[in-house]
Length: 134
Length: 393
Image 1: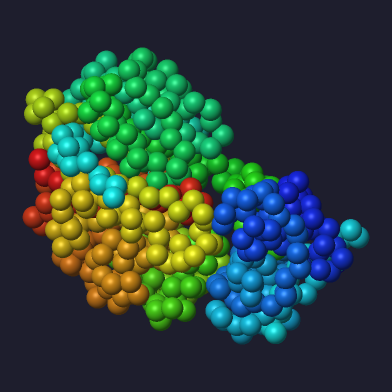
Image 2: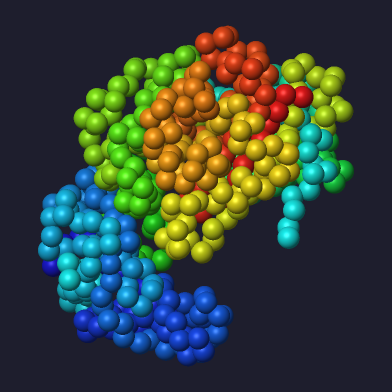
């Protein structure tokens, strides 16, 4: 649990993403016309503009595309967390997600490192996807 | 194939340039700093306020129709006026739009500028500082960022730095050379915010902010404004200052996002620069000095590559060679840049480019025999870019 941290206030189009995360499933919008996943959620496919899509599970595996390590406290709720890593994770299915890399010291994180999803139950009704070395 | 129009090359000139007091100017709003810079630009040009019939500016994010408030302060109506919304790329776009408006016959003499009170605004209270630093994220939907402790422009650009280091072996030492070179330039500029020398050792010892960036990788919080005046080459002949010709400009916007594709490593400067070079009829080897948007040290390295001053991936060794210093291959940010002079979202880069082309600086600040200046603007969540190429008239 992480007291006082910002919790997601989803846009309407991302409600299904957070609902799945609450149940510890990583699901992204997938286009029924061209078959591709995308992120962040929106009402039409950015690859082919089709509006026919459904949320579908992804493998939860990916690799670190790039990352940064926060030393500065920008928000008081993260005072005990620094230094912490925020990474751009490229999923095996293609889309890139911003997240934290956990379960590994910041100085061991590297670009291209294989990672897999884990879920952090940050509030009673809210779970946030994070990533850990695969 | 889209081709930038050569009909715009050398038809307009910048005839006035000015800045406000820079650095810490408590008690003055961003609007009044901008008006101070505009008054200085008008005086510099030897014009009367009533000669100005166009305004193109960018306002603070929270201001609506900012150009109206500028016109009200200057006491003028305008044939052509608007406010731009491309972040740090806006200031060059303003000069580009002014040129197009003059060519279209919609205005004769257009003032462009930007001002901000970022030092005063962030030093009132700790709460104000936190609110300011987290604000860009909180304006959007509250997801996919804040819950991970992801805030602010430092981190966004640091992602690009990490990726560049991974792909090309770029090091913090390389970034340090950028910070040190610009500080040297600031020490020759009496108006600069930073007054003390900076060594590579001090660069390395500084506190980390968002790694790989430490304190000296980050640009300044400044109260600062700048303004320039654009008119036709014909009108420019009768004015006080040596006219500086607008040879070309360009822009490109990676609207799919900073995190998409390779946008954080090969930035929109590439296409923006190609357009500007074509309009101006020059290439990288013709450029005598560069005034680059240096929000962070890494962005200088990336842009040097994207503008073709060296190959992609060779920006680190290029800056380590001393190329950016006075007397180097490409003296860059010769007034100190946003890292050491003051941060006014790119407008001071335009002002400095104009001053270098006038050849009126004392020898220690003048890039010798400078004929062409390349100026860049970057912003709008890292994806909007603009380029301006100036030359001796």
